[in-house]
Image 1 (cartoon, one colour):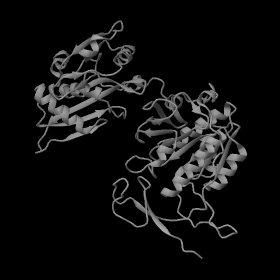
Image 2 (cartoon, one colour):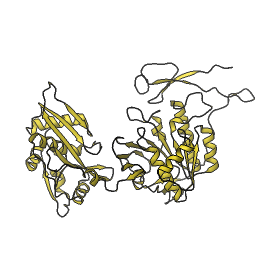
Image 3 (tube, helix red, strand yellow):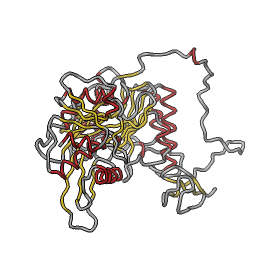
Length: 458
């Protein structure tokens, strides 16, 4: 009997090597190589080694203009926030990967979506490799799901799953989770790089051949990335990430890749005892607990994809008795906050070298766009001066190292969202103020520098 050979595969990028090395030659990551058993090649009756790859689809090439268009490709899930992130609904034959921390609500949201699809007459198959059918039934009872047409399968062998998928021919299928699936002919354990890669490849081929749209639930590492090879995100059509703290009610569903729609779309949910509930007006929800009349608070309108969101940017400064004052940032980039503190000290004479500075974006949002610079500067200056910013004032703008305020994209949409929630004064870059149409009842003030903006606020 032939001896099984071993190889080492990188868990970050999938690079394979016959011997172990400390640093992956493919991506440069340290201590990411795991040992795997290589599958033995099968031999035919004539003694020749059979190919492990399956034959292709045998499709013929078509002219682009001859390919028929179908305007009814998208299927709504019945959950408006999920449809928004997907770009309008599920696309036939699409492969969707959704990742997030354990217990954040991935399985709950997908089970609710499956129930809505089954109620609309779609044939849905929920495949779980982590829970038994009885456990899924108990969760469905808690979520008050009792619809007909929703099939459940507790299985993690891909050969058996492929047989059931071809037999049932569902419109939508859910694989929970891809890390628990395995192909029996491979010697490596479930969750290894080779198993995840081959399992996803098989499921992707099934999606394109049968037209079944499929959701893959993916576990994440301690760094927040999908566990397994990086190739996994390249193989699928859509990548969604669930964000949020399990200690809070809000959950944020963000699209980081979407072949059928725009990326960086954001869906806002609230976790309740009966499952995920959509938040129809997230701006109002995020500002509902805002402390009015307190110093160190500034309102900023972020743009997540095509959705404007008003958020409360908070700053707290206090005299430091340490050699190196603290800089604690939650919801923004720490390096950029340090740069803005230097700009405030050099260009606006706001001394923070002897102050502990704490930054927080309420509601669990992560501000990554430079347009939030002016709001961060305003919040810090408000705390340093111990003077509150007016409750009806919103600020936005990118701040440069010279203290200048640069223009921000889609400023009119941001101002309209501010006007909808009752804000009467908006401070923006002067370049934006020159070429926008101001809504009724809103006073728009253009500023060239941080010093000018602070003189208007205080």
